[in-house]
Length: 236
Image (cartoon, rainbow, N blue to C red; front, top):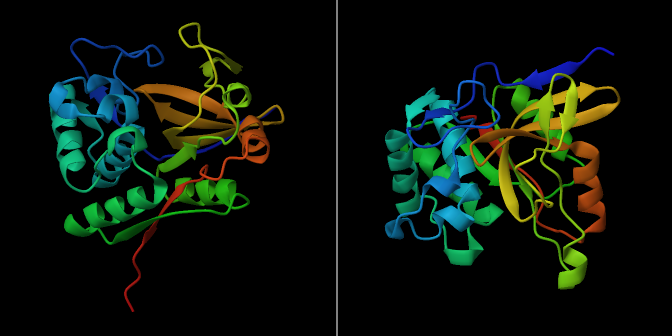
């Protein structure tokens, strides 16, 4: 069956690290940033709760055309954003509305004529992702927290897959479902009746099964799973 892909026109953020190597990229460079790199005391909550910050930083760097960076340079940029436009507030991290406001402020300060906002319509998630990718724009998407008892919550989340040829499989180094987490969509792949989102998370290239994601939306009582929409500002 013919595979169809919609994705970014150029490569996504690639970070060269001296003491860290990607498991999913052949050259060892990262695929996007990794919140786990930020372990200094001064980094505060970036490591455990900075996924939204990383996604915003990666999208901003892509818009700016800066896709190849050394790790110290990348981390310096993220730390600067964390102190100003995109502060990670303890266990709360960054909520979608704050991310949209912070990203809009960052774009405005850098004189980029675009506006960011957090979306709420579940029916429009995939069409909006498709439209943004066609316009060469990465997309921050949330696998939001679900509401319910601790025992029930354990049953919910989405898998992160890797790819071997045309086959999608679970990686040996990961276990458990992912939720309460922001990732960055860089492509949509349609093959053999499946729709897979190509995403960046923890510096790796993973894939999310769209059917599993929508099942999570519909069954986990999550009200926070959606995307950040970035659009050009049209002057009147």
